[in-house]
Image (tube, rainbow, N blue to C red; front, side):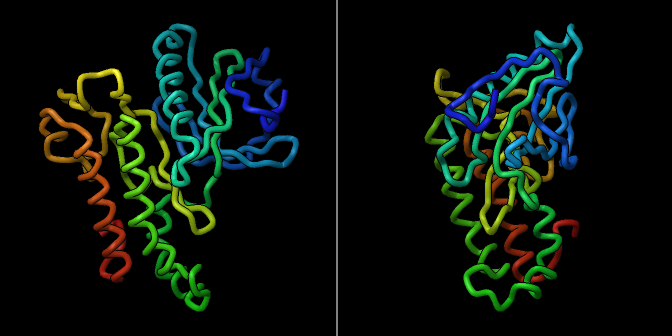
Length: 237
């Protein structure tokens, strides 16, 4: 079965050896998933989020993967969200395929910005500076769309924002909350599933928070973009 024909949603393979994808590069990892760049037999390239679990972990992990897939499906036609291709199951592996398999995440791009700005300074609208200046509006539009779909991201940070061919994409909805069936977008309680550097005060304190916590996190990202544009510091400073 091919990934590129029609609107395939979920594919089941007898074993992981039957999955028609070739690993190209490692992109990142989490507690139960790795993210890599893969290629199919048509030479199309995808980013794959691969969950590998033991049988006793399946009952907990599968619903989380299904929730992430449903969120990705709802966001697939927004131009600044990663585009969901399909999911698949092969033994004790679950995979999610999205595009693009980006050149950089925003953290990497900002670290390279001075070099890229010098390299592409004469290329008009595709110069590094012009590209970064467009990020503000693109990310604000993406977050507005996300919230209009009754979804909170909950972990907005440069590492979860991709840059590919001068375009920017919001990614990694593994922690996202779909509050369409809830009474408002509020949640509360403490937890470690967030990034402290970009977390709103109410998140750090375990207090009630809603979609405004996403806006705070995006504001922190905007501040890092702005300081990078001004050559005042890099994201590590």
